[in-house]
Length: 211
Image: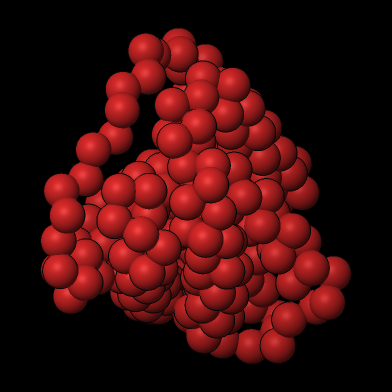
């Protein structure tokens, strides 16, 4: 279903984006520091489940696009590439802001899971990212594009689950620094921005294969 080079490229790109921490990781770190590693891991599971739903939604969206025409799918891929470039530029050009301490209110584990799920599920930026990112690595010549999109989403979720769990486990020792370090924030900003740009420009230059 996947070319090994395409799948490997996806896993590397996904890994780079995931390792560079964003708001979800900072929330997990804050939860782990303030309420323990178990609470952090539970929040990771909630966030991951929300991402699975976004993967399914992206696959369903691609199904609707493919039902329209191959040209529509190519358009979606180009728009996705443009969106990734936009994310990269805005991330790199965003002015550093004064760091504020992230505070999370202690909650029962089931509420922590639900909160992580709902917050990620209702995040429109996550939905847009999945719709823009996943189709870049789907190839109609190798089977069902919606199925490929969903599987890629699941792979992304698994990588994120592993990475976020590591952050949750390490947060007990380093969490306070991770939440407040400006160096940490700046490095993840530049790292994420460059990866977004590389993905978007690479797709735009190579062109869509959905023809």
